[in-house]
Amino acid sequence: MEEVNTYKRRNIISGFLFGVGLVAFIDEVVFHQLLHWHHFYDLSSSTWGLISDGFFHALSWFATVGGLFLFADLRRRKRLIPLRWFGAVCLGSGVFQLYDGLIQHKVLRIHQIRYGVDIFYYDLIWNGIAVVLIVAGIVCVRISRRKHYAE
Image (cartoon, rainbow, N blue to C red; front, top):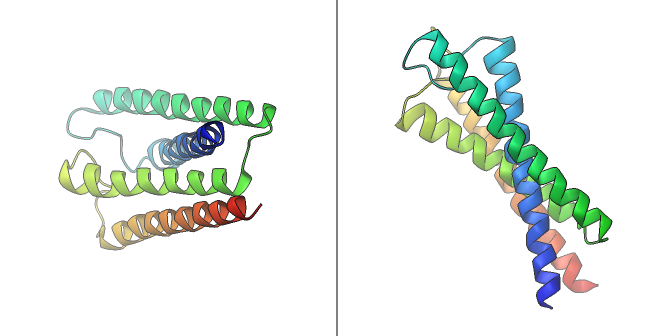
């Protein structure tokens, strides 16, 4: 039974890491590089903003690759629980996005989603999507738990 719990946890950890890495990667590419709306750290010069983006990008890739290594191991051992893993991806994505929207944007104020506009609707959409992802992740993990116990 302990081995089963270990693989259940690994499905969560793998999916969560991948979700964090995925949404961080999308944030970096879309909002930092393509749209030029902000940098990871906007409280200094553009140079420091770009350097902070580089570190942010590296960390997002470490999370993505780590999650995928665990995913590959789960598949190899035939211990992947797809719905649980997908739920954890949603959880990781949503938790990271909510952390970014609340802590980095509002509490620490190291950057905003966008500058020079009324950000109320940007914040509402950003944090709203995060909450939807978290709820979807919780639902998927719970359903996978019930399915797994039924088998």
